[in-house]
Image 1 (cartoon, rainbow, N blue to C red):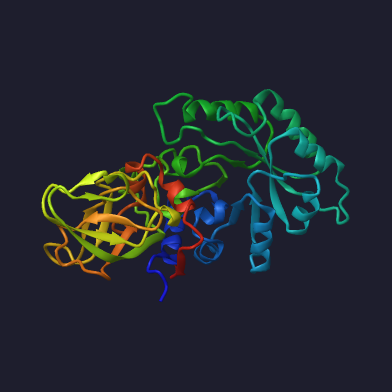
Image 2 (cartoon, helix red, strand yellow):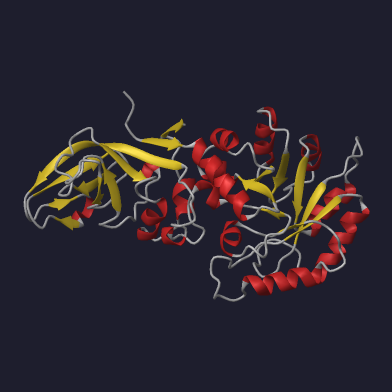
Length: 366
């Protein structure tokens, strides 16, 4: 029998979250962002659950090839464009849209001799304050004209650095003002909004939105309370089982380093999940774990983690779950315990946890 840890991926939750994006951005087309193996959820599940999208956005051209080989006929956007001039022909063969963010990428397109004389759909990226990828405003218009002269279909693109932090400078408004001033009289569709902008800045959506984390049911800010009323559904549910129960006396310690000391006689459940599965080693005592069979109605209860997370196991306080036994199911994150809550207590964000799901964890697509 396999080790009991399992990640369940809900394609219905994917569909629900995509519908929410359409409700929030009804005038925009949608690039569903599936980089990093669909944020750790796998391409197969995302392809099935997000098939109603207008296009998929990703990083690796081989992932674009996977989509084509599995029947996707729609648009594919390479979010970081090309990494080498030899990839231009591959991108043409796979009918990819390209983000262009630097002079080298323009030169590769200028030097490329297409056999089919096809032209790319280009999303030219402007650096409006993120200071990551993109042309600075004073160089953007020249880049636009170089690509337009080649006959490519042009789009304007930028990325908001602080859409989830409205009071932090530079604000979304400042970035938008810079963007709009720079593209004045350069008529082309726009792509600006990430998940945070879709949720909280719906006056800056543009013609194409680029939802990422919200499609997976987690928060752009890293805090679940910020999306609690956004009507999103978690797509990944990480589950396991209690594989042993220890009876502790007052003063007994738990785990490596004895971080937790029992305040009284108590039961501690040992769960088949550790940092080698993608659970955060830095999770502190008190991190929530849901256990079936609670103290009151038997439907389940949240119990606190106690002791240091080890490679293959973690331990929880069962005082609120007297009915729990070996074989009782637990949820590490998902529908009962938001992944953002686990991440926030562990000093990180939900993005990192779902992206870090280990290959050894079995995955079930529902």
